[in-house]
Length: 181
Image (cartoon, rainbow, N blue to C red; front, top):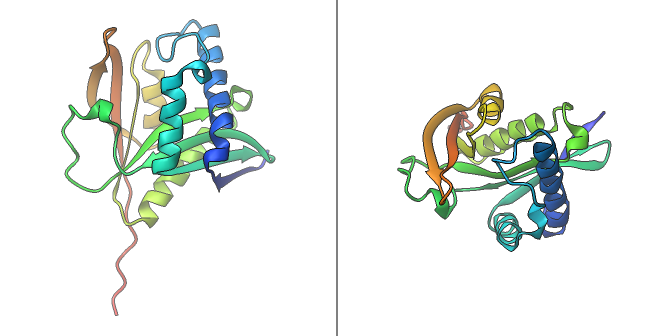
């Protein structure tokens, strides 16, 4: 399977929402509804608005497996307002939102390829910090996934009336050396 990564845009929002729905279905089938519930996220106006906003405000990258959209992530230069209670990093950063994959492609490395691409894009932008947050409940498998992809856990947090457990993770990337001359 050949994985390629391309820049995305507003036309990719329906595919991203489909990937999120695929993930919700898979999580629910695994008995793990704590992350995103059991209903398709594409039916949540708040989720649809969030995905569209991050696509509009930042960058979106789509991983294709043999030409078929298999995973996507959005990248901006700050976390969302829902993390405003956490201390800022004190330096420029890139922030990953909405990493999602079509579960038909589970185990093919499309998510890891996107995370590596986000790190490279962050480095190329001259930014040294890449961060992400994720669901930290159940067995913390998602946290372990990010750690296996070069991230280190930083701040833990909870949000909402149900105290949804989250974890912020950071990855240092080396910006390109400044040219002398």
